[in-house]
Image 1 (cartoon, rainbow, N blue to C red):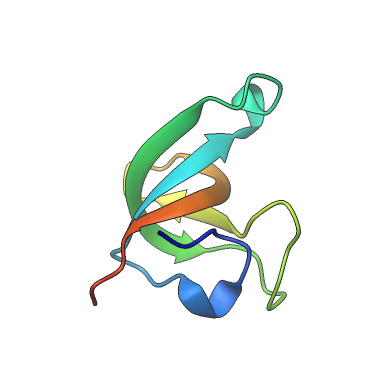
Image 2: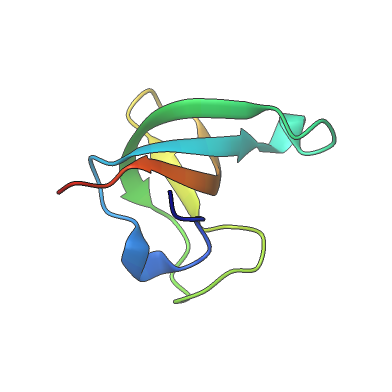
Length: 68
């Protein structure tokens, strides 16, 4: 499992765990499939921001499935 801090590691269609803005204090993770990458920088220390297929937005904490 990779962490989600490097943009090049994340592609649409991947299964990831993200932390939503409302869950940043607790660190609760939300699982979903990446639809769009919202961070344009190649690296972000808190995780690359993505939009999931269900519309939720958060920062990637871990990549679960990356066999694409």
